[in-house]
Image (cartoon, rainbow, N blue to C red; front, side, top):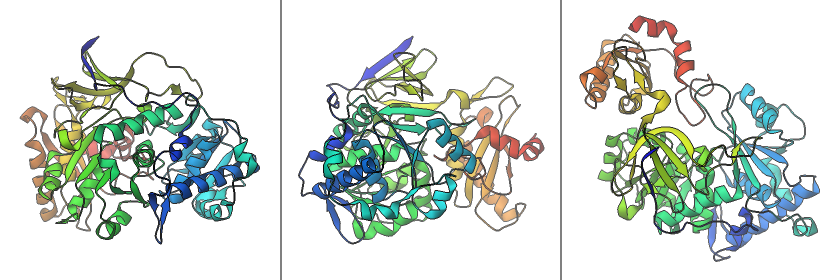
Length: 498
């Protein structure tokens, strides 16, 4: 079954059976700064008091252990407060992407059986299509003393369900991945353990908390006692970099590529960036290295509470996604599929709480080197096979083309075809047949083709109208290409390429 398997030496950290995630707030210096708001710092003691106050108000309003609570909004202090408060009483948090369509929101709400709702704005509240949605702004009035309701609420245990996260999926409707308090803790605490002492610094968290990567990093910051500024997205992060001076960040490749295109020549006190969610072009990592910033590639997926492997600052191995976090084992099946086992692995998809097998089959392809570092080489379902039998991984080609400042997105094609082609969207008002534009795009394609053999190279490309967006259903909420949907939307352009 396996060609090789490896695990990080030593036992990982696990949540005690009689504890829930709320208990981590009692660890560490109560007077140490935990969150940095626009006008002041919030200590661990103050945040814990806010959490217990909101948790008590949730109980007074009828929220009970096991109830599903849907949350729709951008990253901010209120999102974190709602998350911890709901978890403190054993409620189950159901994140909803702010960019979700009405159809997607309806599916998440209906499938999860959510009965309580939080939204950032009145406009977001309307998108739920239900009455009695609580707004983030209303939390200011919920921060009274916790009262006996919270003190007497049912204790939360490690194996209680903490969240249902709907996996974005590249086809069809998403499935609700269940994660327990123990899953979330194992992922976050062992990420901290793996990269110590990085989390003892400061960070700006701009990842969406509607994505499990963002919530895992948030929990890791609380466990690791990080001084954290929460902002809605990358534009706000850029505005805070100079003044806040973070020592590390957690971002996805798409954000790193966008920041690189700005041509910044300094990142202040920043020394490390944890990068996950997709593949990252080597030249992007080299750009940041030239400015004194290490890119620590990591690997994970929703079904493993997002953390499986990560590079550490002192043992960073560029080109790999690092070694397994403590307590996690990675295996490689005979066909190259990456398998995962550990306390971070989901018990199943909602509502069937039962693991089907001992190993989590990730669908990703990869290999482990002699030192246990994992390299991801592609997706089983995203390998293109030409009619000549050549296997082509599209992601490295797409990553390289997207680095061009005029390119907004790219999808490589060729499955069952005689040669490889690409659809490309652009960030410019120039006509799509403009010779200057086409010359620039050709240079981006040429650069990508340097990564592969001639049989794998892009022979033709087409600059297409519009862009691949989440709103149009062409990207997942985590910015992955929905290949089938793009293929249907641009069928005529694809036909013109062949």
